[in-house]
Image 1 (spheres, rainbow, N blue to C red):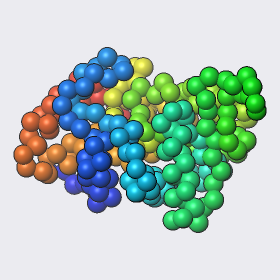
Image 2 (cartoon, rainbow, N blue to C red):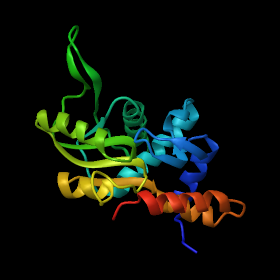
Image 3 (cartoon, rainbow, N blue to C red):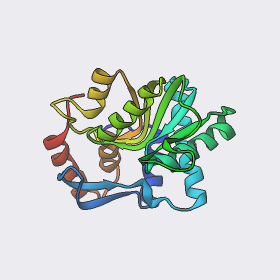
Length: 218
């Protein structure tokens, strides 16, 4: 039986309790029909957001990325980068500036597409999930255009699915973009958790079939 690390087990059970991780039948943006769904937008209250930020901050501390700035892609990345920065200051004593983008450039007021601290130095992108990697590549373009260096991506879950080819989206980002991806959990961790919890056999079987069909080469 696969062994799941304690901090990953704690995060999965937090996600289940918060209604972020659900099992059933869901049609994804990609058109794939998935037996599970992961939506960090389900976390809407202060205490849970505070706890979520702590998970991200501790993952960043263990990543070795040493960023100068955190970047949150619109839209879900914006609250995520905010709670992560707050938790980094509180738990790690690390006072990191943040920036994020608008979906559309603003033509009045301060104008532009970027909000927050000026982009510069080593930048870590903070987001919710890696599926195909499309949104991440958009963020990379903005960061590089500003003259900053994207060094890593921190996400809650790696769905471990194929990207644009046979490799996983995470492997493609590493190979094509030189981007180190750190996920709090991956689909394999969810499979391990299901295997260790009696009564979850139906969900486990459905996820194994899905992973067999859409999983990318690591």
